[in-house]
Image 1 (cartoon, rainbow, N blue to C red):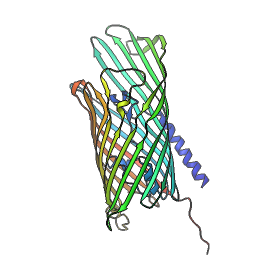
Image 2 (cartoon, rainbow, N blue to C red; image 1 turned 90 degrees about the horizontal axis):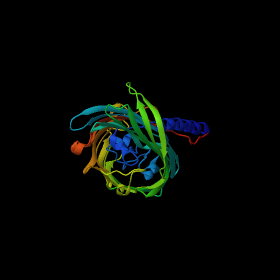
Image 3 (cartoon, rainbow, N blue to C red; image 1 turned 180 degrees about the vertical axis):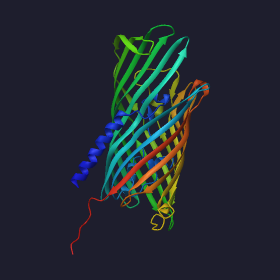
Image 4 (cartoon, rainbow, N blue to C red; image 1 turned 135 degrees about the horizontal axis):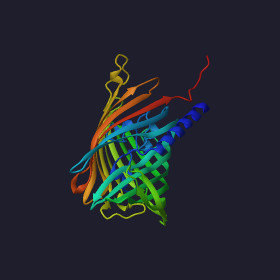
Length: 415
C-alpha cells in the first residue's frame, strides 16, 4: 500500500509541474481580473453541462466536496483538454488553439470519511492582441494564471446526508505586457506588469439524497465559498526598445517603477442544485451558481471601460446507461452524457456584458478491471460579442479523462 501512495504522489507532483507551466487559454478576456476561470470539475461533469449534483462510488467530485463521501474505491483521476477558438470582430477573424492539463487528483475512502488531494489550474491568462490608433501600434500580451492545490474531507453523516470541506492553497503569477511603436520610428516602448498571487480559500458542501419512489432517487446539493483575501506582490517595468527590421527588439533603457503590493478580495460563491434519476440507469440535474465578482478589481491598474458585476451560471445535464451490468453488449455499459450551460461572466466592457454559452456531449467507456473508465467529451459554444468593438469567440473543446479505481484494504480469509 505504501508503494501505491508513493506512486500516486510522484504522478501528482509530475503532473503538477506541467499544470503550473501552462497557460490554457488564448482569450483576450483573460486580461481582466485574475484571468479566465477554468472549469473546476472532471470531464464527466463537464460533459453534463458542468453540473456537480450527481456523484457516485467510482468517480471523484471536484466541485462539491460532499459528493466525495460516496467514493468506495481508491480513485486516481487525470484530465486534459484541447480548445480550438475562432476569434471574430466586426471586420476580421483569426484561429487560435491551446492544449492543457485540467486536473490531477487522488481520492481515498476510509469508511464514512473520505479524503482527496490534487491540483487544478484555477484561472489562466494567455492573450496576444494588437491595436492600431492614429499611427501607433500597440500589442497587448499576457500569460500566467492561478493554480489551486486542494485537500478535501467528506463525511457521510447518514446514508442520505453528507458534508464536505475543501481547503485550498492558491498560488501563481500573471504577467501583462504592452508594447507600443509609432509608425516610421525605430524606437518603441514596453511596459510589463507582474503580479505574484497567494491566498487560501475554503469550499463547504452538503448533499441530501433519498428515494422518493421504488425506482426514483432525488438528490439536492449546496456549496458555499466564503469571501477571502488574497495577496498580490506587484512589480512594474518600463523600457525603451530598438526595433530591428526583422522585428527583433533590443532593450536600450529600462526603469523599475514602484508599485505598491496589494490585497484583493476573492469573491464568495454560492451554488445550489437538484436532480432526479433511476440509480445506475439515468439522471437529470440542474444547477444555479452565483459569484460576487462585483467587488472585484484589477490588481495594479485601473481601467475606464470595464465594470465587474456579479457572475451567474445556469446548467442542466444528465446521463443514460442502457444496462450497466450487461454481459452481452459493451455498448450497453457505456455512459452517455449531455448538457447545456449559460454563464454571465461578470465582465462588462463598453457597456456590453460578456456572456458564454455551451452545449456538451460525452461518453464514459469502461476499461480494465473493477470500474475504471475513460471519459471523452466535446463542447461547442460562444463567448462575447462583436458589438462595441469587442471580440466574439466561437469555441470547440475536446476533453478526455481517466478515472482509475483500485482496492487497498481487502480483507483476507484463510480456510
